[in-house]
Image (cartoon, rainbow, N blue to C red; front, side):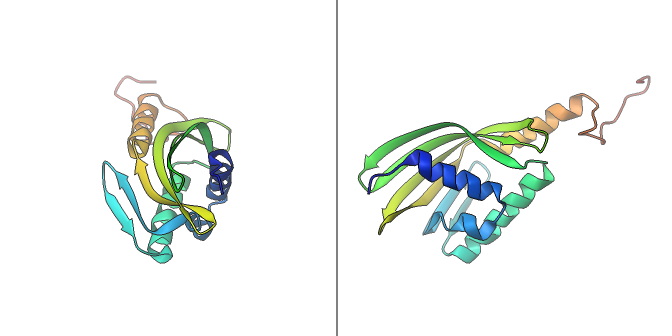
Length: 154
């Protein structure tokens, strides 16, 4: 069965947008690994993966992100059973404003008759959210009620 990266990631995106952690976990092979500059997680089963995905979805909600969108998708065939796919994601809020843009690389393996994610490399997701938060602190806005004004500000 040939790999259709566009179809796979369209389904993955829609499932993530549903904020259903258990459904997202069905896209993964076990064990799998998630690597970022902050951490390396090895998920040996769906239960451990579901905890991680739920925490990630809660983080997105806390930041006001309601919809992930694929902005660029670049698949590379490594073998007939392995693909590497680099994705540029945009995270949008319920007002259709882009909150952040970040990059993730996935390695997928054909397992029986389906494709499963075995490795995720989160290049700059955490940093993108941190930059967005820092930028929102620079100007007062309704999105940042914590903005402190210096003396003499109006």
